[in-house]
Length: 254
Ligand SMILES: C[S@@+](CC[C@H](N)C(=O)[O-])C[C@H]1O[C@@H](n2cnc3c(N)ncnc32)[C@H](O)[C@@H]1O
Image 1 (tube, helix red, strand yellow):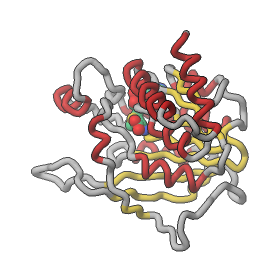
Image 2 (cartoon, rainbow, N blue to C red; image 1 turned 30 degrees about the vertical axis):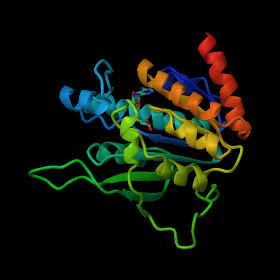
Image 3 (tube, rainbow, N blue to C red; image 1 turned 180 degrees about the vertical axis):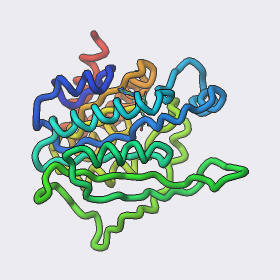
Image 4 (cartoon, rainbow, N blue to C red; image 1 turned 120 degrees about the vertical axis):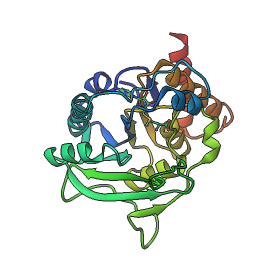
């Protein structure tokens, strides 16, 4: 399977095509499965018509994330890292699956941001969970970003991301911190739930190769458009940028 390309397919099917021990870092902001009411969904997306996959039963969700964790263990290199970003609502299911897996839990970080969605009768949610999991309990890539790098990150959400026609784009600064910490230049980074393409953009900007899967055809199209905009405005970009431009052209010609 080629790198620097986003595939419009189910991630489990796609991951099965990846060879054993071929990925340095796997990062995903996983589906929250919180079954947003239709009205909220279309307001957040800015248009109707996209069905966001957030209405699985607990059993189906556990099956999806369980299979995904298992595939990650197979495709990651021995010193590779899996980073899972999750909201709090289904965190219990995720942690339970992590516990049953062969991964070692290195860190459980919190991203604290300002301006969560207003609530009347409960506290406003203004954090995400970020789990760092390693295959090895001895060796892994870890490039500390500052001397005293804590497990609570105060990095605000990118509010300009509202323009992206996706209900929950991941803030690029969060992804950048993860990519810089847990991979090196030239490494292969996988995002199995690519959404609007932010991980691919961060990889292009930071000289990493990427592979992405996105099941929804419209989000997939948005990710290609955003990546194409990015690459066409940086003609002298690094090797990942140049390569992804070629791959996008090939993909669009299919
Ligand atoms: C939380 S969003 C990811 C947002 C993304 N990081 C971004 O910045 O736009 C999760 C994404 O996973 C996609 N998805 C859900 N189930 C999937 C599956 N089985 N395979 C691939 N993508 C899937 C959804 O369509 C959604 O775009």
